[in-house]
Amino acid sequence: MSAPLIGDGSLGASLVAAVAVGLGFGFALERAGLGSARKLIGQFYGRDLAVMKVMFSALTVAMLGVFWLSRFGLLDLRAVYVPLTYLWPQLFGGLLFGAGLVVAGLCPGTACVAAATGRIDGVFVLLGFLAGMVGAGLLLDRFAAFYESGAHGAWTLPELTGLPYGVVVAAVVVLAIAAFAGAEWFERRVR
Amino acid sequence: MNGQRTPRAYADPYLAGAGLGVVLLAAFVLVGRGLGASGAFASTAAGAVAAIAPERAAASPLFSHYLEAQGPWLEWLNFELAGVLLGAWISAALAGRLRMAVERPAALARGSRLAFAFGGGVAMAAGAALARGCTSGQALTGGALLSVGGWLFLCVAFAAAHALAPLVRKLWT
Amino acid sequence: MKRQAHAMLALLVLGTGTLAAIAGSAVPAPAADEVSAVDLAQWIRDRRPGLLVVDARAAEAFDIDRLPGAHLIVDIDADALRSADTVVVYADARDDAALGGPSHAQRVLRLHGGIAAWNEDVLFPVLRADANARQQRDFATRAALSRYFGGSPSLLDPGAVPARGRSRRGC
Image (cartoon, rainbow over all chains, first blue to last red; front, top):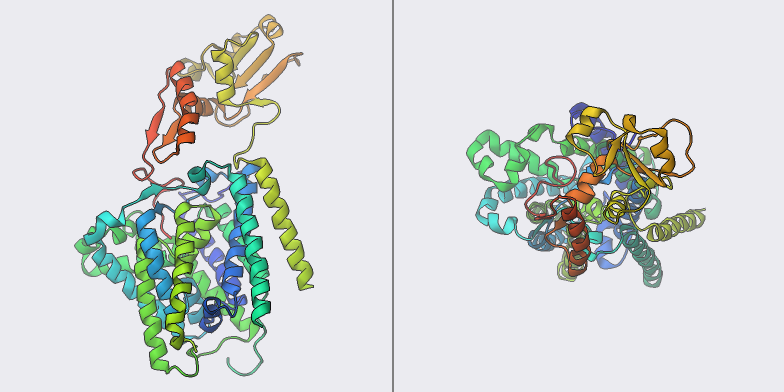
């Protein structure tokens, strides 16, 4: 049977899967120490590049898994939700997010990990995040045009570049390995 | 809960990252979608505003999205986030890392740290609302699926954080 | 121990990544005994000699919609089969079209993706509005093929349609 295994009609099964997946997510993040703001912020001061290593490893492994499962007919890529592209909001939103991240020291996911393990700063990041979402939701109707600008739907790098999917996958792999090698060299030099 | 065992060292980032990648892949295989975090907060905000001022909620391009179909309280990401909290707690409990604390540099007062945490959270929410996701939803999930917007967000967010870091050094040293 | 784990992980990632570049497409390739809808369309348009297209579905489905020049499997006799060089069998999207009966000397191929692939890839191909020049040029040949068979190629504004994959989602 081809994946995705749980269809749109099975809300219960889907929500059970959500908890299970979340369990793995939270566990992995905490294992790596990303529930600690002080460890996380080390990324941006060149002390500890764990954030980049964890994220890029996860991205690469999942990306390869998706490619090969699809290639062998085990996963129907057309049924997998690809996050939508909105060029201008994502550009501007990325800037805002990055600024907030380096001030807070935690992103929403890692702030959950921090809060769950007793860190009060994590709780405050989440409170601020929720407050920000309320504000953003209430103010966005004034910027509706900007919010919907640069819409390209589900748009992948292979579609943008015209390169075969597998070639883009390989390019990301090379980029990841280079980034890891660079990180190891950099951390050894700093130490 | 605190101080009784020395906390264990963190796991290797590459192995933990690979494990996280397998979790993400499992999500794709099980339900055809990836991980996320900001959506749970957007959904909760939508539900809260809808309970108080339903017309304002319906008029919001952000909130209206979560008020359709199964509604804001049965949002998939809410359940995933519950799992995240539980999984993080289990991992920390096993490793002796459960600890009530305010993580901060010694030179920064607790109140200041908490204020900046809150403020940073507000800025991140604004960014995540515009970008339709955060580091988990856009950068990680979108990145793994080779989404153009996901990679754009990933690069811009990390560049912005790196660029701003020297200016906020006082917060961390 | 950790160095070994890292090395193994790096090798695995580099290996599968390299193979991915060689494989190219993320979509499963047609098997050796299959033919893609676009290839079959070109065979039909080029009037490939000895080509026999067989519809393995029920007669009702055949009456509603069928490939050009196709014959219902029940109407095929042994002579027609023997004199054909290439036999292409198709059914619905699931690739389980089968000829059955005695084995034949000539090539028997299944249509990869069934009649659904014919409709999607040949008759109604879609071009994204944000496609680049090269993608537009490549699409022109698909568009001509589509019009030849009475289909209609179309342009898609990706920003306007609902997301690929399941219904509304957020991150």
